[in-house]
Image (tube, rainbow, N blue to C red; front, side, top):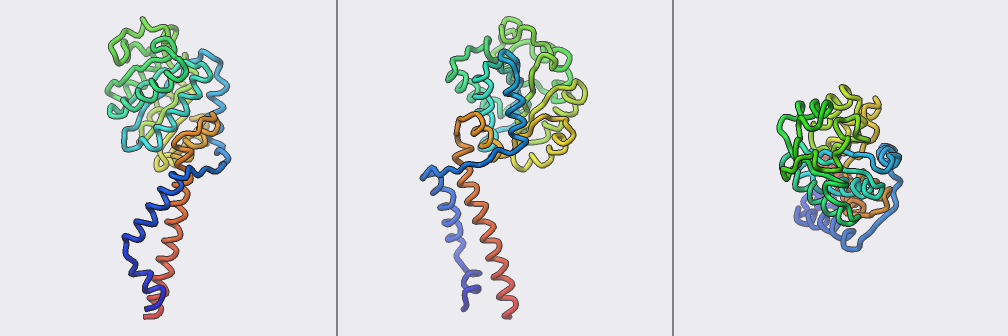
Amino acid sequence: MNFWERLGRIDRRIIYLVVFLGVIIPILLKVTFKVEPMREVKQAYEEVEKLPPGSAVMISIDYDASSMPELQPMLVAILEHCFKKDLKVIMLGHWPLGLPLGQIALDKVAKKYGKVYGKDYVFLGFRPGVAAVMINLGKEIRQVFNSDYKGTPIDSLPVMQNIHNYNDIGILIGLEAGSTGDMWVQFAQARYNAKIILGATAVVAPDLYPYLQANQIVGLIGGLRGAADYESLVHVLGPAYLGMPAQTTIHVLVVILIILGNLGYFATRRRK
């Protein structure tokens, strides 16, 4: 039995072990490497950076726990940026199961910067009917959310004073694990000319690039790499930045295994 035949019969548990080591070793050793942020992520950062203090940023949680590894670090990095800049944060969401993730991140980062609920940020929660919600937000937020997720009337919250529709929002940021980002563009940007940044999982991000090229969105943060880029730009190195070496190692390993598998297949086939 030659090398290629032995390679073709290798115990799959050995492959699992190699993959496991490829993930765990960079994480345990806290390996990091400097990566130049992608242009579209820089654009998103710069749009938030140039907002004057006191501006309102609306963040939509359009994902749940299955997409948390990619989008939660992205959310935390964006919140870090907003609160560093003294921006007002208005959070809502179209995925009910993802709302607790948004609330956890919002409360954690707000506490770090000493921000006060109702004065510096608010969590509006969820309302059914994605298209209807987006359209009515462009008319009057109170037509959709007359109270926050606790039931407190939003007119009693200082953060919502003089905030009525997209015209009063400096920038809208949607964090997407599905097609909700398309709807933000269709209903918020196309109808009301809202300025939008989209963050998305790696599998969703390629579908959003046409919006960026058409200037319908002003920035795009894609996948764990995009989250890591944003963390580096705000100088808060979190789980995305620390996870990039492990992800890169596995990508390289998978490519090597695919090449070896194909070489082995053609070598044994030719011999037969």
